[in-house]
Length: 266
Picture (tube, one colour):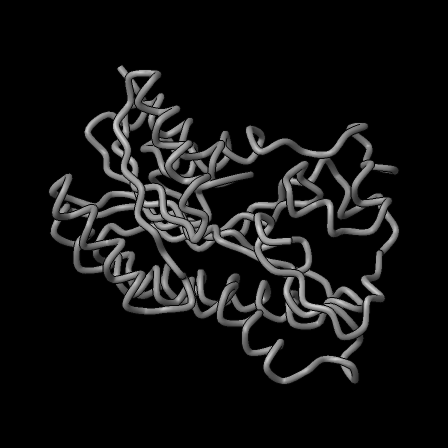
């Protein structure tokens, strides 16, 4: 028996990093998974890996900044698998880099669209299918940068703060429907996106547990929040960072005028 037997999950940003690890873990625990991402090649590889291990998954090309794509992702889950139990809003970019005075309006808007507006879409379009299924669990990726400001990363930080606020509001609204809404706040995780971070963030220097987190560390927490083991938990933001939020000095991203997009794009 798996912890997610007979459950259906959609995961954005599932072609690599935390999303990939979570998709594989969910499938191993019995869930049918919709792997959603802009990266078609990476997404199809994840589906093939899940199938080779005896799991069930399909790939849905998804631009999370487009509401129609989020709707299509949810509709695909319903059409192919007949229900929706878990939505993991995970797709992300670093986005606009530089101090506030250096950020272009279009880069600000694009960053907020990927990191915050997409979470709004993911929650919005999960509600009706989850009500039909008798409830569900919605998890979104925030960040330590959603708990304290990061110089040189104003758009990212603002978006991640927004994810926490949206999580709390949605949890209040949807509790009556047995829909739980939580978010996670990772520290430095060894994913392709970490390559665009400062060197101290890439090495894990100063983290009390002595290393960067792994995508599998994140997958374990998301699995818990998706499962019935967390059935009385909602409206919460879970820090998962090896104690770096407490112990590490604040860092900066002084790369004025740059935009760090999806990890698979160079």
